[in-house]
Image 1: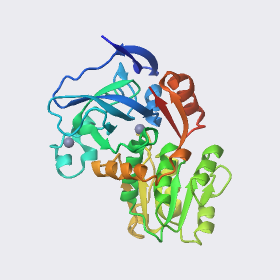
Image 2: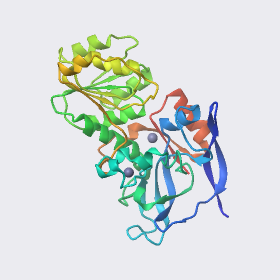
Image 3: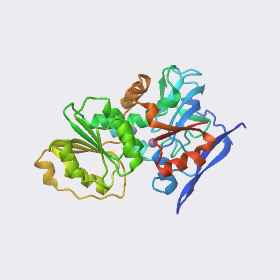
Image 4: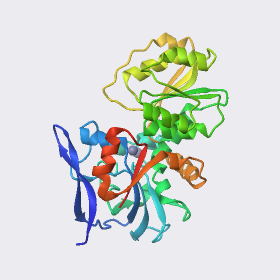
Length: 349
Ligand SMILES: [Zn+2]
Ligand SMILES: [Zn+2]
């Protein structure tokens, strides 16, 4: 059987595990609705690091990489709308379509997905030369699209979803807490819409600078500045109408409740299952505020994210800080991620 290079996760119950570059068999189509794709670009996600540290579950012996694009190499006999050579992007979260959440239009909360089925986490993904996937997780891309830019479509779809949940208006002062890769991608989406002020809160110097480069009007560093006072000054005492918490720890959630304007929407985006925060219910009632969650996205968010890339609306060159061959995934890619001196790193198999 022919072999390919792949980044395989090896689980360790104590430490989380490690990722190793190995020669593995090229996967084969086994079902009629399967498609074999040749991966063209695969982006490293913060979740990949979390998996290795034991902060996110993943299946032992799985090829990681859940943000990826490729071209169709082979199709199962039931495939009628894809042909060899078509460019595709993968939605790594396969939805069943018939659970109660899917049928209520909340496909991002699909019960099948919650069993742990994500490609690149629980099933083989995109840190490899080839991948076999069911047709229903593939979105066809236009031939003209740049495939490195297209590898941002998955995280971008989550940012589009978050922007839609936040229901941002022209007269809103928007605050994003956290300028990690997702905070900055969300910022990139929000910046393309007319709003009053876009403010980023971030403790890291490098990331704070990136937030400004990507179009934030202000960067507040909570290490050295009084966040509440700074927001008061910048917004002429109005406060934040929309707050995106792209971190998701107790500190950032509670920080959000010190800067929110009457009628504000607080969108919880960053995830930490251990976080427990304190809130005064009356602060919500008396000022009619909303607290909302934004979790991955719907198929329509993928469609919108594709258009944002096709039409070059998003400043991809600023978001993609490094492109490396798959061979350097561990030596260069994961090391840069640990040092936090990067936004998105793209690997090419
Ligand atoms: Zn991801
Ligand atoms: Zn479902």
